[in-house]
Length: 371
Image (cartoon, rainbow, N blue to C red):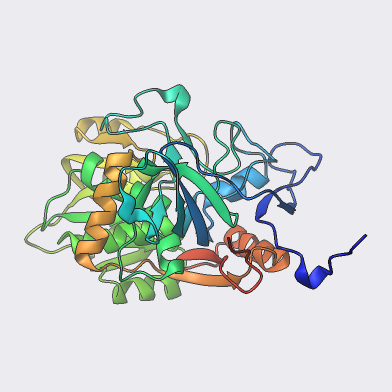
């Protein structure tokens, strides 16, 4: 029998997923695993995407600690991806997609309703979920033609991968929930994470006066170069007083707060918000609940929860980024889907809160299989 040398063996597509581990939620830490699969074949109305880059989110860290619902250890990890359309399935109406660089929608089950998913039971963020077998930590993926959007041409693969989830979350928080208008004052808390930095970039591009908080003076200084009007260290007991002193005399209040931490944000925000001002909450990293105070009631303040967004909001967000020439901030990029140690280091960086911007995996390298 003729033997085929390893050098001549055709490389198979790879999938990054989670391995088995034992432990309680919060204590367990699932390891990273890489497996080979057969080349996916696009079905009716589907496109085959050769992924070039993927990015991490805090959700992925929560999943590794089993602190997220409907976790799958077998399905591909990660939600954010940038790639090139390599093949079109039957019925794909837009034939010009072939060869285009695209962004993948990071969720399923939410088409266009501004109130929320049309069927909450079908809604999910992609990556490591039992609800959908789609993830961006792989070489190739088949998705419906409606789940890709042409990538803005000014973005690199890494920048494109850094945009989807944080961009959609920030866009919905500012435009749909807070309904901001040019000239308003907005406070964005916890600068350093991807959503907060993206909300800052979007806010500046929208003509807002953006103020921020951070736990690091270095990160606070960096935001000034991104267009922030001012900021404060949230570790200081009365950081809200620092923000209040920086507000313009012509508009000495905050119109909206965009927050992803929770904790004591309501008691702090009421000292800054205008009557009827809004707090938009997209996460609670401090604790899974927070207090709603009587001063907030007397202020007629509004508290609005928000989770990512719809497919329509995603398209609107990408069009805005394209129109304004916005480039996502990247903290660090590692090379290769099989570089598990380096990818693990990205998770360590996220866990320690050292990043300033997005953490990205450059999938496209010499070891990536081609069709």
